[in-house]
Length: 114
Ligand code: SF4
Image (tube, rainbow, N blue to C red; front, side):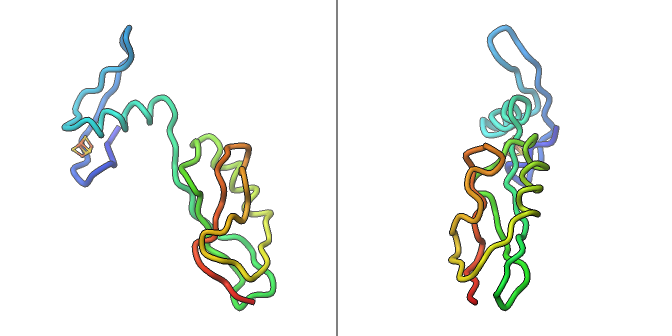
């Protein structure tokens, strides 16, 4: 895998050992942590838009409050696509709580008036 923590983009490999994991190719500790996280529980921040009714715009930009497990992204998108928000909305306001049972909220990325 390629480390995406910084622009250097080190090429990493990981193998399981009796005591945990061994990461090769990393130039720093952050890369090692990234490799283990990607290998054991990969997560991603999710950004998207939801429908909004009664506002000057048709779509409201949203983002996840924390990274979501990668395996939950498609399920989360189904909830996002089915959601309709109603103004006024404040930046950071939770639009969908505990999406797909992950304990992560989907929050507005901007204010939106009626
Ligand atoms: S391993 Fe360290 S130096 Fe290499 S890309 Fe990742 S963060 Fe950057």
